[in-house]
Amino acid sequence: MCRMARPRKPLLSRDRIVEAASALVDSEGLEAVSTRRLAAELGVSGPSLYNHFRNKDEILDAVADSVSAQVDLSMFDEDDGRDWRAALHDWAVSYRAALAAHPHIVPVLAQGPGRRPAGLRVADAAFGGMVRAGWPPAQATYIGALMRYFVTGSALGSFARGFVDDETAYDPADYPHLGQAHLLADRRQKVDEGAFETGLRAILDGLALQYEQRTPAATVRPSPKRS
Amino acid sequence: MCRMARPRKPLLSRDRIVEAASALVDSEGLEAVSTRRLAAELGVSGPSLYNHFRNKDEILDAVADSVSAQVDLSMFDEDDGRDWRAALHDWAVSYRAALAAHPHIVPVLAQGPGRRPAGLRVADAAFGGMVRAGWPPAQATYIGALMRYFVTGSALGSFARGFVDDETAYDPADYPHLGQAHLLADRRQKVDEGAFETGLRAILDGLALQYEQRTPAATVRPSPKRS
DNA sequence: ACCTGAACACCGTTCAAGT
DNA sequence: ACCTGAACACCGTTCAAGT
Image 1 (spheres, rainbow over the protein chains, first blue to last red):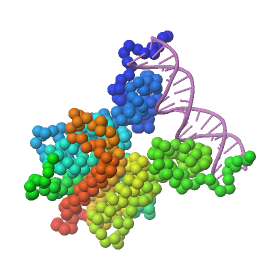
Image 2: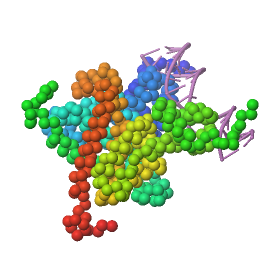
Image 3: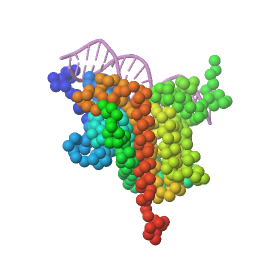
Image 4: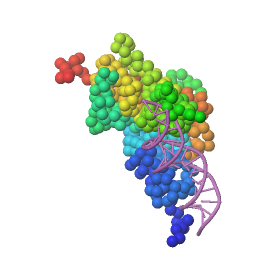
């Protein structure tokens, strides 16, 4: 009857905790994650988690970061040979796919990289890729930020989940143009895809215009200090 | 010693509750809002709130909606006379300003309009404005959605608050390009503004290209069924 | 080092009771 | 109709105690 207070092999590890937390977030949402519930899922008592993480927020940060780690960044490799526009497009698509696969953690992710390593790696790679492609550093920073705005916004405020599935919610007297707002779920997913593609194309087209007109630098005038 | 269980004039009202909740969200963040704390702030006991709202989520929805209600929609008025591009620009700026003034409630707002009246009004006005300007309904839906993605994403994932204020967090060995990531707070705010302006301009420029090439309809060919 | 149960100060919500 | 206190089933986190 002697339940060990401490077994020779640790019952828990950061990885095991993150794995269980991710599964719980994906299956039942952020609200379902309590330290006690998570511990129960892992077969330990609540306070055990505090041997591996300082608090619950750190666990959720780790879950968010494991999603960031799934974003493909290979398009920013030096010897990739493709142009910034194609790289940005492929990055956005991969970025969004990673987030859309785990929608419930997006609110945590969308707040910014904080000190999460994979989140910082994403920001770093995109910035580096744009600078290498010839964008001035200030513009490269803007591009990284605005792409994050758009991608996280699209994953978070999905049209598909953002409107209620109830036609009586949209009185035509109040909202004369929203007659179609409560459409079938699969139609709504098409709206999300269409909006994302339309927005991404617009952003890339618009940035291409700005790229042509970017700071003259070494082209027109004899370059003014280019540190 | 007879404290009234029910005074002649109600102590609470939905408006008073929303007002107090908004103040609490703005000053101390979403996490500070508990039904008990909110009730205390209003000088009543916790359960009293349930006479006016079904649950806490409904209160937060109402707070979010009061922010949506501050978004200017006048640029979509019929007799406004300005083009869709100017309207979209002004809308985005006003939209973002409303959200940036109450950043802590944005995570609730960003999830979509749900059944919040002011949120639906925003979606309705933008859609209607684009259709009136000549956009096909499907495109108008996309535009409303993608603008929401971008604006809520920018308000939620602010660059200024999204990076930690600690230079040791960005080891150049790990993130070769993030040397500037922990800059002064006011510089970071400039990044947010720059990224928002750059992104908004790119979106509008890109949409202008798509507007020119939109469904030929009655212009080129003898219109193929235009229901 | 790593797990435990007990404990503290909280939660959201329900409900019978008051007026 | 609208407020109350008591109660229920939870929380996150700390800590002394075990091995």
